[in-house]
Length: 301
Image (tube, rainbow, N blue to C red):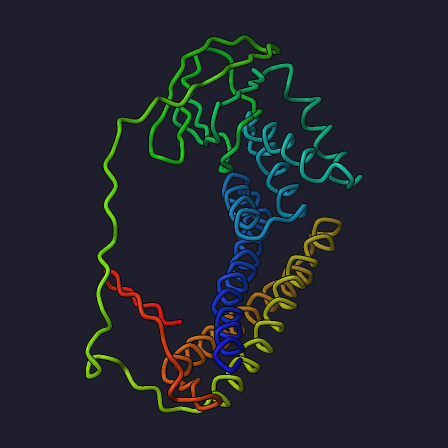
């Protein structure tokens, strides 16, 4: 029971840390985008709003990215983001209004592409990504003229097609994944138990790890709140982009960065404690253990 509790706690800490870092990184990217928007650097603002959305998806980040692309006169990208806004946040009235306005003003001058793959794929059009989600179906906008499409599949293979489109036209395209050549499978090397002298010894009681996990989770919770608070301030900034609101957002960014460092430090320290923890102190030291050793990996049951 002690081993199971310790394993679950360690898994929770290690899985929570990257998620908290994503939220914090998204908040930092969002703040950078706001500063670029305030300086009317629309292309840079769009880049960082899209980065924020990819790290921690939100309607505020995606909506702001679409508006910034439109202001930068990158009409195909703006219309594609508007489609994503309607698909992901169709129940949000403000997002729908932004998406419909962008599509109304851009779609007559663009080619709309509806593409389907026989297996999940990622699409690029004229060497530019048309989305970062691996899916069976894709819908996006492109400039009129020749369009080189590439579908990349999970196994590393790709399929290509070149199509022509006129302004206001909708194209339907299907790309088929090529059949990969046969490959031979190799089984991992199995070995008997390692010699006793090569095994690490864990000498700390579980209480140290549990205490570290509790502290890490508390810090992670504070980090989540801080990151979400920075994102929430965007609505205020969008409604009234004043210097005072920008300053509040920057202070929130600083607070979030401090919490990132604190959470990561506690997480690493807790993981190290887990390595040196002897979970068998809560049970019989004579308990049988199954042992599997592969290349650089050891799992004990």
